[in-house]
Length: 487
Image 1: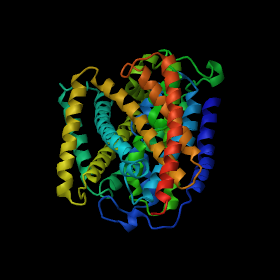
Image 2: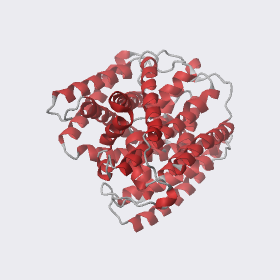
Image 3: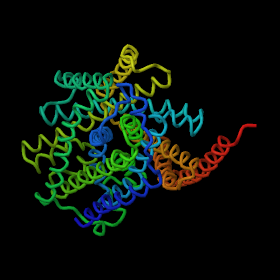
Image 4: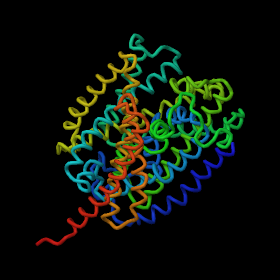
């Protein structure tokens, strides 16, 4: 477990030091935040730091930091190094900077900030893209917790022919509608402490179960840096698209801006945004270790990790924590997507409302928009359940789209930092890496252009260099244009 402990040290110590560095770069002020200055009782609602932090954690921690790392464990112990390094210099920076820029932009959502810093053309592309992402995420985060509940708690088949799955889906839908329409402090702010306790209890239980049960975890020097994936997957880009939310997730940018409207002090930003991503990294590392150990113990095989990670959740939870503890851990996993899906659809409502200039402080305006959104979500969900391969297709596109959205966010952050004369490399470098990951993945994937890996890698390298040159040139030119005095 030496590699695992090294990874934990990188995550905790590195997160503390690099988080302070990024905070010094951003220089929090004592200025009045949008939560106080623009309080409307619906979305702009001042809340305490611990509550905002917990909401942020539950918003960003869907099934990604569990199911993704379970699949990522097939790449070997290198996961214990790449997850924490990625969280520290990539995911946590992404979440913190977006949250802070939003606070300094009157709680503006990402599309609005993209329009201001990257221009109308990129804004139009991003607006459509992020709405589709949030819509797909809403579907995924109804499908996943619903099926987990029916198969792992009720022990029944999760098919449309089973009325139980319909009832469970309907219950999740009902909660989402309520959470989407009501003020953030009335529903989300009230129930999240309960959900948070379940989440942390399950994560801590699995973490200590690794040692109590003696799960065998190999070292990186035993299998080599690259490892040997049993299904021949390439580490770059597949690992980073697979793990996604456990390292860097573009979805998080939509959630940080949502929480930014409830933060009462800029100095709370590092705890609320940066540190919560570090905590999500801990969850991801814990489940990666549990999955790897379960495979080496022979209680879960590679096929399960690769194709049925939800089954691994049940196997690990019950083996480590027994019947009652296992159920609690499984409930914690079920809670994660539910507490991300509600705010994803809330963010979608806000983004569409802002784009259409609809006053969303009035419920008569929110309700029709919410009903249209949920109608589309229901239609896509039914399609995914009726087609045997429907969900797999949706999940692949969602995972890739998630990382593309992160590239948009890193581009925005880079442009903001160049304009404000900040050390922009802390955003540009991870942005370039994920640009390379996204392009190489879609060029090679069967859901993409299906090119050879050699061609995909070469084309991706060229396009990534072009991206870096463009964003530096564009941001400097735009900054000079907007700072120039009028004639």
